[in-house]
Amino acid sequence: MRVGVLTGGGDCPGLNAVIRAVVRKGVSEYGYEFVGFRDGWKGPLEGLTSTLGIAEVRGILPRGGTILGSSRTNPIKVDGGVDRIKSNLADLGVDALIAIGGEDTLGVATKLHDLDVPVVGVPKTIDNDLSATDYTFGFDTAVNIASEAIDRLHTTAESHHRALVVEVMGRHAGWIALHAGISGGANAILIPEVPFDLDEVISWVTSRFESHYAPIIVVAEGALPKDGDLITKDTTLDAFGHVKLSGIGDWLASAIEARTGKEARTSVLGHIQRGGTPTAFDRVLATRFGLQAIDAIHDRDFGVMVALRGTDIVRVPLADGTGVLKTVPMSRYEEVRTFFG
Ligand code: F6P
Image (cartoon, rainbow, N blue to C red):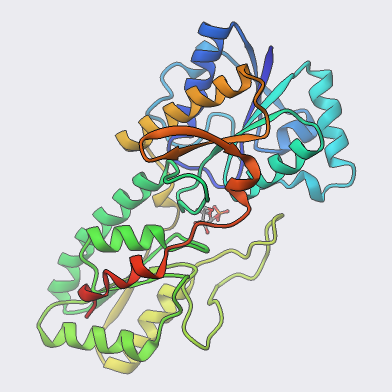
């Protein structure tokens, strides 16, 4: 069997650990050959490949990013895109595909499976917002990076008696903000799922200053004020129709300065959360996903996604993973409000 592998969407620590596990088990236990597709769905669409074998995956376990490259190419939006993918796979003798990606990449995989392309999905996103899996790899790394940043920001904020707003990633789901905010001892956590009341945020900031501590506000980039719109610096859309986020942190710091008369600064963590070496948790999860994905290929169990349920890796229909986003439940948010202010 000849298996194609691609990584699509925003990169995420642990992608290389998946690729390594897929190739190591595929070659040594099943005698498979592999084709690396470059830059997400652009690879099969344009026939862009790279050699993928044991030599290529040596030493990549701790490396961030993806040796295959990534992109947000959407072949469904390209005229004749699906037919081009099918004919490129046939020309290259590729029997099945492993697509490693988030909502968008796996959404394409779901549609291709419906059109008879044999595909198995591996969920990835630092946002941890895919349904049907308890965790995605990359999330733990992002939370640790953000949590360490918050620890550092506490000491400088205290020295200058300033408010510090920390903007973290999280387009539709506030999991990174929630977990990093809890572990970093934030005085307010603002997430996309719960539009915030600016008056309430100002009262938390004020009470924190009154107790002679410097407030730290963690805000997800997709968070928005009640009765307000998403605040962004850039309005261009990607191939999946997503606007580029970031801007809410600066907006909030300006509002805090204007309303409290105290200094406020913003730290936008941005892609630092996605780069560099994965945590041990993410390496293990990514490795287990890779091992199970190649087993699904071996079983010819196409149209599935591997997923973490408790401590087990299971297979679920691809459509279950991408149909509905896994957002932070209100009860999870409510339980940490005791720390706000
Ligand atoms: O989807 C994962 C993610 O990291 C989001 O949290 C963020 O909004 C987006 O990707 C950023 O994408 P890009 O790297 O294309 O700017």
